[in-house]
Amino acid sequence: MAELIEVDDPTDPRLADYRDLRDVTLRRHLEAEHGLFLAEGEKVVRRAAEAGFAARSFLMAPRWLEGLDDVLAASPAPCFVVSEALAEQVSGFHVHRGALASFERRPLPALDDVLAGARSVLVLEDLVDHTNVGAAFRSGAALGFDAVLLSPRCADPLYRRAVKVAMGAVFALPWTRLDDWHDALPALSARGFTTVALTLAGDAVPVEQAVAGLDRVALVLGSEGPGLSARWQETADRRAVIPMAAGIDSLNVAAAAAVACYVTARRAAAGS
Amino acid sequence: MAELIEVDDPTDPRLADYRDLRDVTLRRHLEAEHGLFLAEGEKVVRRAAEAGFAARSFLMAPRWLEGLDDVLAASPAPCFVVSEALAEQVSGFHVHRGALASFERRPLPALDDVLAGARSVLVLEDLVDHTNVGAAFRSGAALGFDAVLLSPRCADPLYRRAVKVAMGAVFALPWTRLDDWHDALPALSARGFTTVALTLAGDAVPVEQAVAGLDRVALVLGSEGPGLSARWQETADRRAVIPMAAGIDSLNVAAAAAVACYVTARRAAAGS
Image (cartoon, rainbow over all chains, first blue to last red; front, side, top):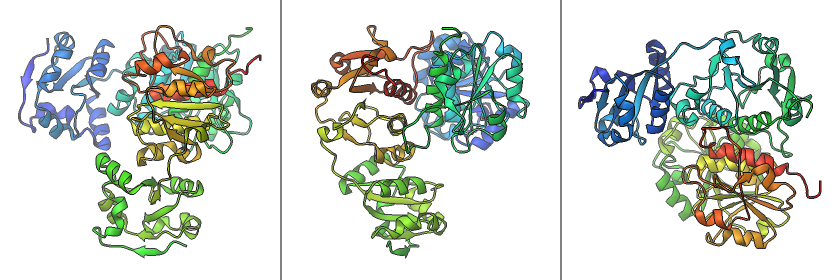
């Protein structure tokens, strides 16, 4: 049962996890150092708790307590009850979905554990935008993907903004980070996955055709501006494109991820 | 040829079009009153000019002049040359893509003009988020849709944020607003379109099946929270769903738009 603790001093050190949430650089350091991540909004806080993450603390205005009372009842972490003005003062923004919670990160699972039993895996190279990372997780989860793998420099899926956009899919979908960028795709091929890289390269075939008949697929996406690295394009088993209207350069990466996940998850089975 | 005018007074009345760009309410009034819209970033400014919109003025730091020199050469509107600090002071945010321009809006075209020759039309009901409106335009344009129709209360596609996310697709794709919300879908049916509403309603069929064999299709999407209104769900010719993994409530509306546009644009022709 979370202890309810009223706090009216914005400098109270117990609120340290919630400071300056809009300062990405500061938050990166703070969250890495303390091994925490933030969840924002009743639904997302609930999903993190349901996924078994251990809360360090909760912070909310009184009117959000009732909606989360079962979550609070099940947690030993303290709940700091504050005015909305104080929440805004500490976090640096208007907390319009009310509840915040700080959770302990868990060690990242091993690649083989994430891939065990997976048939469709999304691989993201160097997406720097947390919104796009969150959107890719959400679409992947909704459209039937089994896991997500991130390049070493891909943005953190447990950053508050990514968590929020993903609507909790970052808790539901197994994921880990690839340590070895250079041989990441050959390592997946060696494990029985056909790596299909989304690219505008000249030899790319329509994605529907690229994934048809495949058993295990790793769908590989890069960021919108630079696209996939040359190394990953070269080392992918297949290069695929989403056919587009003449004169249009590209889809937004989140839209491309949604379409490619849809097509890949519904691929025709071998021999059908 | 745009006259280059150096401005170093942030209160200069000639900069009025660029004030307080983050204040959505104020901007709505100002832009409606003066019939203008803002474009942000070299690529988007260029696309607005190429689409034939008349510039009222340009505003940029010296380093952005060269990249837009052909656009400036072709326009009689003045170009206010300012420091980046002054641009930030006037607009209220860090203008990291540099160039801004203010363009004259044009009268909205008549529905029948927008629909002339169109085979795939996207219809958006009451999307309030400018990002989602922009993303829907971008995906629609990229995936081969011919036009977009907006419910009376749908957010403005020419609002700066929507324009930016759409990457100029709001200029390329014909669009207008539906005056009559109540009978909007029957009016489309009467014009030979099969209206296909994306919904989680019980009688919804997979979208691929819903659009198969159709000639002219109006794909109808609502906002993420409330979804489509009961009226629009009832008056649509067909109700369709994007099949999703168990336990997942929904896709983000931009992702849903991308998937549904992809499927609809590639629908099998009648008799095939």
